[in-house]
Length: 358
Image (cartoon, rainbow, N blue to C red; front, top):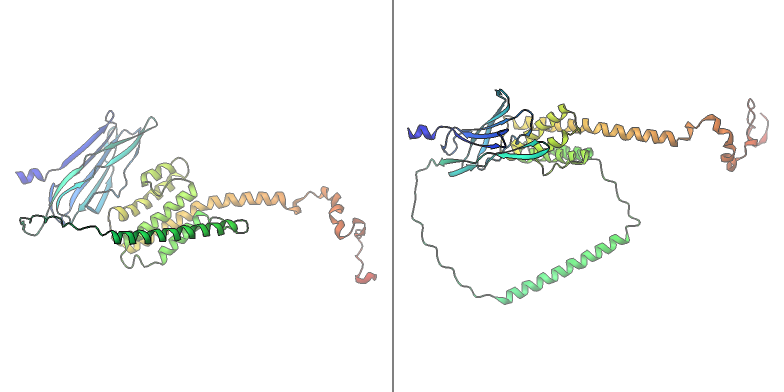
């Protein structure tokens, strides 16, 4: 009976306001053996009228690793329900905690949060217990301070600091002297920087050597830096949900926003949750190509706008577009090369070189 009771589901939830948003977390076992898998479920119930920003798929699960996951949307009358079920495991023994899950939502224009409670899991070792009585700690050994060594170190540090300050002063003086004549290269567009980073990852051996976390982290960072430079939003230190909330203000169409959400969540699973795809090399290359395509398609609109502005400017500045009726005063512009009276009459041929008649 005790084993059956401990194997029942642990449920922790917290209500926000008048039960408008509820987040529940549960596990199917409270005690496991190291390496065993258990089911961890996150359920979010919300009023359909509220704008809910769900947590990222790659949750922080403490010492537990995500082995698999499944997202479902059960139908509940009068509620919008999202349920994510994970299969998790750990190789750390002892009492382990799964941190609370935080869900953000907007109510009457105000940003609010609701949080579940942490769950505690007991992880037992496969090896037999070998508890021994620890020995007493030895008393500290008193060592007399050696001030001569301290003085030597202080003198060396002071000398190094003086050299660094002198070098900084010299370099600053040279930079100021060359500011008037130095040419500064303009910053590169965000999409070109993203293409360089993605090409470097494409040419690297990270996938072949099994460094999946470093590879997906590089892809995600390149995409986040591009979003910051292209759409002027905060992306490097924001969660996937916060990035999507900024882009849903009209910066991108809804279908493109959902595609971007899937790309970021795929990278988050490998980067934060230690998730390894079934075919990591194939999925890694596919994710990079999808990010490349996203950058290519979203930067095109900006390039067309700049090209249109440049064409309008060329139309205003191009002398070939001048109205023929304004050419009556062209003789003033041609005086340095000959007056208008020297031009041949219509229907006649210009004189041959040397003044000879044709």
